[in-house]
Length: 490
Image (cartoon, rainbow, N blue to C red; front, side, top):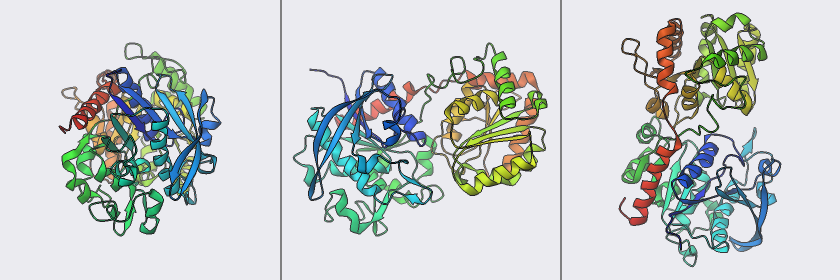
């Protein structure tokens, strides 16, 4: 009999099986870090078309598993795989729900049956764990798609389940996504109206919110940075949930995300033109020259600052700021390369700017992971002017790649980036606070000025490249939270 702590990790996406954003990076890296700490951690997620089409070693585990869902019993297959780090992963396979081109929706909006899809996923978890005889000590849920699980763990309807009463942790990756549905659809969740649909339950302005369900019914709630844990208790960042968060703040923890340096390290990165480290930076120059050629930029930019931006195209990410001062930025005799997908109006505005500034501005619409690595390695300065940012990972990657971040002081950006002071050599990037174009432009101008002083710039690079934001630190904090709720001492 093992004395290892057993943790069931539930996510709607995880690298390498499916990814739309940072949640997938966390769900891929954190279980691996926990495993290295001796935790018996297993991951569960839906089996999407993207995983079906990928070159992954996936094998059948269970066939025709019966899942009670509403008044019916639905059948589901379960597949099994392992990540490179050896984390055992179960994929819930039901074609009518998950075999789709996109995970959550498309340009026209969310899938109309997302409540059914993720409610079913939650119920399937209960059937799965009993079928494989894996009863965890803790269930760790992520974002609204799994927010139903903490409520089900306390529901009379699941009292006969071996999971009933299991302690749970619920992590908010972005409080802007709240899983809100009409109250008439509550029966889909398997929860009764009586006992759950009220202000202290999952009722939210006359509707139901699965994000709120996770917050209310989990034993511990975490966010992805200490600053974001504070911010979501304010009207500016709480997205209408601030009073709920404040009410439950005694069980709220801000745990900073980490970086997976096995994937993001310029000394071993297979996607970049030349590997490099702080001790041997010649490779970064080669990466810059290569990207300038690839994006058809002016060769004279080899001696000038090259700016990079890898982001979803949306106002949350600060593109309204960027577009309002884009001409002024490029007037600083710099180049800029942008990689991202999202709002069509933003993409069109960037394409128009490319036509105004040929060989100064490069844009790739979509997402290309190898290109993201090439941009990270080639750029001198990395822009993250987010309106809000729960944690953010690209600023951590940028530090390791010797690509100095210019960020807005919010969420994890504020926790990780410390404004550089040339007089004492302290700091690892540049920050601005007011969400205003001028403040953003002024910080870029200042960064470009510091870039001219090579000795000072090298000192700044050293501060960032030598920093350690590995997942082990974050995993140890989560392990403390798991142990506290198991012992009932949190």
